[in-house]
Image (cartoon, rainbow, N blue to C red; front, top):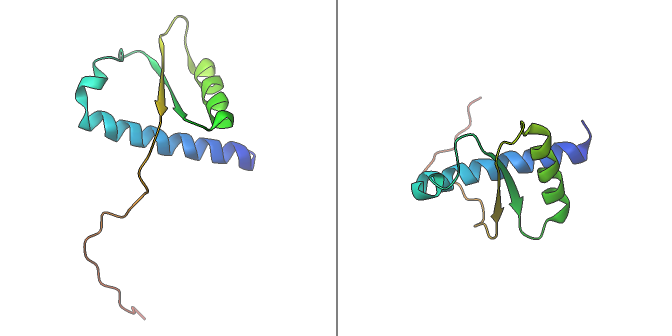
Length: 91
């Protein structure tokens, strides 16, 4: 796997994970996407990734399986959820 492919796979995993968390917070959205659908996750403004994501979906699609495109328009910065911690020398 090339470095570019790895970056695309990693980005896809991150965005898919974020989309799954979003669906957990907005369960009505899940009702709009059939169970057997293939979801293409895209990121607004990232044409290279979006083309890659659409090609991936077409490879994974079986027959007349419905395809839904989810375009993430804006994301908040990644933050840690740690509220408190302690750091100490172990050795």
